[in-house]
Amino acid sequence: MTNTDAEGRLVLADALAYAAKELDPDVLVDVATLTGAVRISLGQRTGGLFSTDDALAEHLLDSGIASGEPVWRLPLVDDYEERVDSRIADADNAGGPPGAITAALFLRPFTGSLPWAHLDIAGVGDSPGDSFEWSAGPTGFGARLLLHWLELRKPLAGVGGTRRR
Image (cartoon, rainbow, N blue to C red; front, side, top):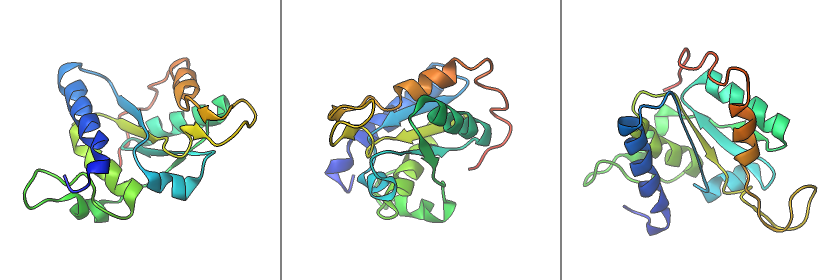
């Protein structure tokens, strides 16, 4: 661990690995205030989305718009994967810039071969003031998006077909 401020990634990685191995899910979707970098990139009104599966990403993008919790898909750029390599550990939880991408790349191996999506809500998890349906403070961002997605007639339609690794 090279950044003690990124210790939550270790806990999330453990949770993803446990879920993938022990719970036999069809997909993995996690929501976390993973990086300040996503806040710099997308501000405080749009969450970040990373996904290894195009259909899953589309479902979540559409659900974000429909629920009033928009997300923007960011790439899992394999060229940056070496930044999470470590000489002394299995991986470096803080691979440096681009911070949101390297954080997601750190998590990806813990999801096994499952379709996976990560919502980085660091920018939208807290509202600086009253605005529309949000009041100042914690927003609960992601809950409405996920509920909308799960209420779809076929929330897993096409999932598992096209994957970006």
